[in-house]
Length: 317
Image: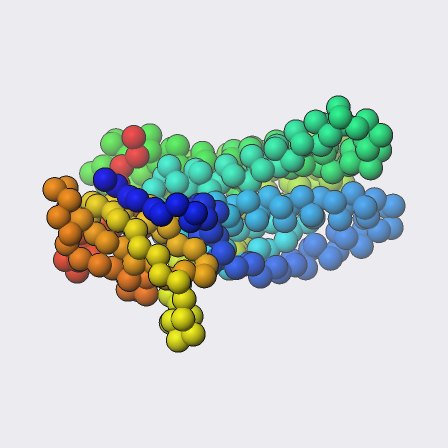
């Protein structure tokens, strides 16, 4: 008995994102400069389409983070993408890869959708080809192993895991992985600069994207941040709200029970031990308070009952 939910309850994963809200959109100064340049070159539509696809990309990250109980506070829109290299303190490497890969995966699915649409209705190709090719391009580019792209974040997680045992005594696995990722970033950035110098006629996009990666390699101060969601609903209780009770084991981590949260209802967890003995009830507001204080979203409900917190992030299999 891990958990039980009454029939008719909305999807666990679909509703948690409602607490995240919409992230604040900020436009980098270079974004305006490049937008003006594209206006004069007659490619403003392509630029705007790239911006829309980039926002879709980052919203996919935000939705994935919401499944873990984190909300994206800000999206910084850059000339050739957006920056959300924020703080997801406490999540495992596996979940960090999950958040990173959801962006390009969303773009790939969008491209596949348009291709399927062309097969069913070929006449729409002329109106959707730019959106399809832009989605595909942004997905593939973001898989490059460079900062601040998603491929760079995935590479960092893979390297940290690979170095974890070798650097267990020194504790420098993350530092070593960070250095390697920045070398990859600067190398790929240099390749774009070289391509710009060699290609004729000159493609300014190569120069600008190389500069975008260079900012990621040396460190960009315009970073978006993640924060834990506060899903308490004291105001709703004053007006009256439907009660929703869910049974879970005390070994269940906070991360898993967050999926039972839904708007329009007040969650009360009935916590049981392995022998199905009822231990205590945990109302939603108290769960929210504990989640905000917890070091990681993997703390179990048993730890909450005992007033314990952990600094250890679990190893990923």
